[in-house]
Length: 466
Ligand SMILES: [Zn+2]
Image 1 (cartoon, helix red, strand yellow):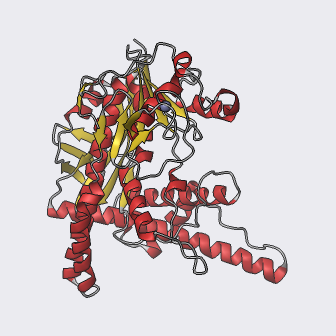
Image 2 (tube, protein in one colour; image 1 turned 30 degrees about the vertical axis):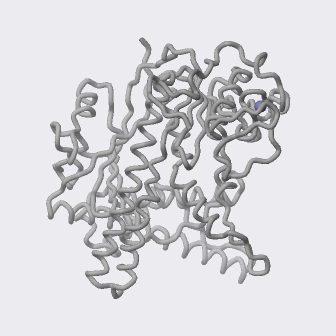
């Protein structure tokens, strides 16, 4: 069997002693200090160049080159003066801060020059204590120590809250190599994340030939074309009451007080829990889906367009702003973007194929029985009812079945990347409204059985009909 090296992260919660907590915070503080120091240098140099350009019409002082090597050289020259305590932390901490700065500046510059897609990247701001504290180690003594400990440079041996055995075994047998270790803090808990180069068996196919259309939604996390509805954990919605209450407590405490700090910690803990619940559900579902059917079909959701604010302007205030913001919260709570990312890499790992239907495919408005496309479908309509053939089915299941149908005509696209290429010429292969369902189906697509009676779907899981 052939193997391929892939980058994979292993994250462990740490169980540090009181002294170690101090050391972890100090290392993150050192990284932040170096980041802010470097940013100050870059800003000063930019301001000087700008000043000279205005005064003399030319730049006379050489501008600071913000490559990592250049900044490191400057830092080493300056550190005794600006940070006489620098030797107390590993030099990796400062290096990590500067590397973060270089990456941030590069992102900003390529975004400004139009070389980076997506939302424009702002010029990096100074880092604040307690905001995404992190520190990365790339060299030095980094290892897995037995089943419950890890070793990091300068900080030493740290106990973990969960077993490190799996990664330890891989490292010992040579199938995994640790490239770096990153410390980070989530509320009051510390984590270490190892970026590893792991040898994975290259799975060509998981042996299944069936297709499952997956419709993502807010009421159900996913509807599968086989008839299963996977309920959404609604992590944020469940925690909203507790969150509101604890945020109110923070507002009542005086700024800078210990009691306010404690109240803020409670808020952070709730947020951490919400993120954990969401991540857990997405992982469980995506692993199960990547292992089982041969092909997965999802929609290419334009999430950014979907969550646009409904507030409007002062002159033209938006309507139903509150309802809209609640809808947006649900959309973001579901974590669709993450789900697609997980499916993308897991389908490669487990040998299934991920197909992404193009954005304009009317998966919700099309009747999965006769192919007629409705012109309108209100959000509140939970059951799809076809005017042409009087077919009725849960809205999400109908969409999932349509995605399944879409795949039959688009077998050309073997991966998400290929789908994107296919989308450029989508006009020629996009299925049209009313196209006969029977001839489009090639026999790969399983006939959804027992949709109205309840039963077990293709994955062998029980579902309840809508
Ligand atoms: Zn119909």
